[in-house]
Length: 265
Image 1 (spheres, rainbow, N blue to C red):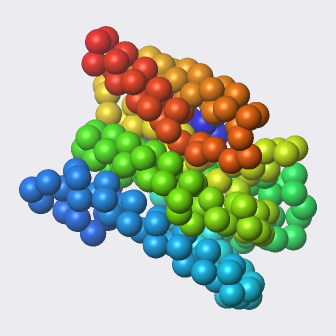
Image 2 (spheres, one colour):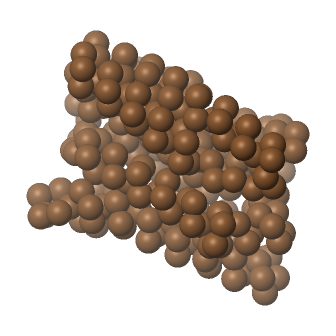
């Protein structure tokens, strides 16, 4: 979340145009619900495909698919970040420099996932999680606060199903998330999916980009407090269980704290 806040500090003073991260136009009736459902369907399909590939031992296809997805996941926020950073650094005021730096960052990111060891991989996963979360929150919450809120709520509900009845739990219990480099963060005997990191950061970014200053900073701080409290609860439950969804407690408490402070202030 701290890395995400650093990313947001570059975007916050900007009036950069938002990018269409979903195929549903914001002016469409019921677009908030449609965008949230779109995210759930995309993630559910992706997790299901990965599970079936693992089940049939298609490791080369999995590695290729993960590499392709992680390349896009690093390239998009990098391009967006360096384009925003060009307002402060004259050297970046041309697309050649922006594209070159984005390619270099993406290449290092992919290399660190597959070649540079677990410690560098974990740091890289944390960074890309924070950047992706802020990238999504900027391009969604800046258009509609409730689209971002519904995405987080729907994904938290889906996370419960995915862990206990769906593909995520089956992947974790059969082959383990360590079989999917770049899609999880590991510390000692605990593993967190990349999605958890992305959506924690997205929640914080939603508070930053949805409210005006100074209440946006107070709302973001409150959401971080809620995420931390939710994470402690999650870890306590995890001590008694082998696997537990990482989104529900942190997301619901983070939203409750952040929205309460944002609207009350």
